[in-house]
Length: 446
Picture 1 (tube, rainbow, N blue to C red):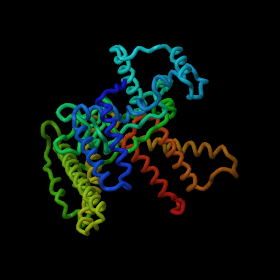
Picture 2 (spheres, rainbow, N blue to C red; picture 1 turned 180 degrees about the vertical axis):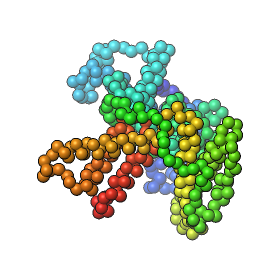
Picture 3 (cartoon, helix red, strand yellow; picture 1 turned 90 degrees about the vertical axis):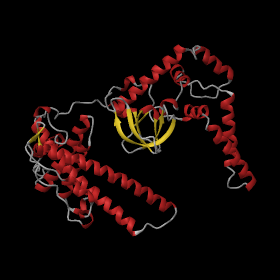
Picture 4 (cartoon, helix red, strand yellow; picture 1 turned 30 degrees about the vertical axis):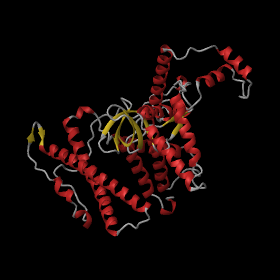
């Protein structure tokens, strides 16, 4: 963190300065100057191939999403200046005045083992506070005065990133996030370069290739209250499709010729290894559908890259390519439908095999939604009964609409108080919203 100026770093900076100055003139200079710039760029590239030069660039300019606001914000001197001299507004002081201010602050001890150990400990503590804020596990922000005003949001699956690898392949490589582990503060990154594969990388060595969203630290100051419906832990008694029901397929000419339909067959019996064969069949179907979906997603990624190449060369996209792309999209849509059905079947068996484990995650939002609707009806009925006859709402459709909108607000409030959100809870919100849309006039949808 104490940047040392050396002959090596000065050499790199000189090359960068010369190269950038020549690069700015590419559009106006003559051909000989371009050749000179190309030679300088080649020398710079050869220099950066050296391990020490490569690492120096990483240490100097590579900051992860979680470290960027910490290192690129105000330094310790600026923070001490704000605390010790809050009325000092100007920064245009003479050298003697700056020297007086430094003497009043005291002389810090730097570049000692104790200093570096203390700085690393402080950095780890700041990172941990930011992680707790990102996970909504730290409601009291009074202990976060040492953090920046804007907190970056955690990266999500599918984000294109640049990550630092150590060991055999030491350096920076591009890839894509495939999994997020908040417990160990790591990302599972699949790298684009052949032979690298997938690695677990700590969050302080992962940088998003796209601008990362941030949130003001004041937004985390809201008190986290326990959800009112966290005690509803009885096993669900909902009706699911039977495990013996075959997976339904749409009569679509493109999907009917798909090769993955033949992979979903399985035999049924009584028990196997202490588990019902019907349950094992559904688990096998679930595993196969997930494997096939992964293949189709990879195939779509390849076609997206092919389409981008065609577009970059201004080449037309042929009808055969469009047909293959449409077939893949329809297959993914059908796979998602079948996946949802099999998940419900597996969930039903899990509730029968282990009813003491509580409500399944997919059923809790449904239960919460029902309770919100009941509470909304009571609120609307009670509020409407307290009003005058001229002001009360008598139209049953309007009362139903008001109850639905109130239930939607209650549902959002309960889910926000619950902390961690998942896809099932977001789906329950969309289901509530779609029910409201279906009950109103089409001209009011917008």
